[in-house]
Length: 386
Image (cartoon, rainbow, N blue to C red):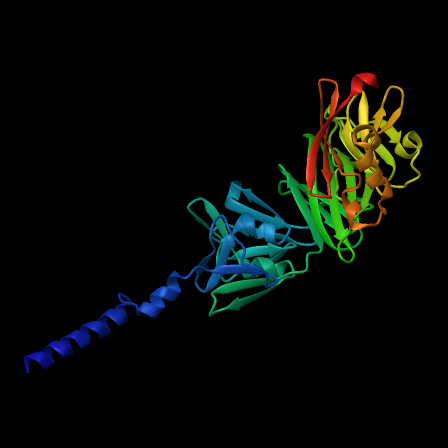
């Protein structure tokens, strides 16, 4: 009788614990501890600096990381604890702790509120994503949120300023802080495949934007579009191209000027955004090609390469005298091997095998990779003789 009473008491206590939520089954505890995953277009889970959290059945993501996912600018405004998330099509305005929001000026109610956790502002991922035209799906067994989004824009930010390029037509936009986004210009940029968008700040008000586009099968074509902006105004554009070869165009000269290849024309731009030099590499070198790369540039010399024939060439800027470097530094046997190569062969993908390292003590330091035996050799070319 005593034994039966103990079992009854144990049963009643168990029911009471379950009713009060003081006890959870091991399986439930394990599921609750399982982290939330977030994927974009069902790719690999995204790693967040601050992990996603679940609040009242709604997945919340860190504000700034949501913006990165959706190619949108996020701004925290301390006055009024306001949040602005924007791209050229959509502007969302939120307030910390409030379910009221605005999408393009229209009032909208949310299910949950944005809130601050340990200094990190979290926002509801479904509400934000769908406002930007994305589709959000919750996979309960995996505890995974998937955001299906077609990226219409390339996005990059530099300090308080952000830029967008529309992929289909090259339209360029910008915004500073939480200001309204403004249209800057129709650019030559186009995206045909995999793309990257970067910015090189020459100064606070002079930025060089670059759109890199890799396209075609099997991805051997590469376009590099550059845009120089002064005080948010487009002043210069260029387009460089390479196919089946590495891109070794340098972004800055030894004197820290920006360098832009526009086919066979090399532009030199000062830190103030002024065009201080324009060099026709086809005319200077005599190579009848439409695309070149520049691999060194200082006050005395430049080292350039025609894209297709690929011969690395030293140019004395004072005299415009040129030196074919492979012929000058390679031994006779190796030089003959490269002369015999078909320019469209696999062996020619590194052109003549030469690469510029630096100019030091009036010597041009080069590295050469020979595909036969995978041999790497360093050469020094004495510039005193030039």
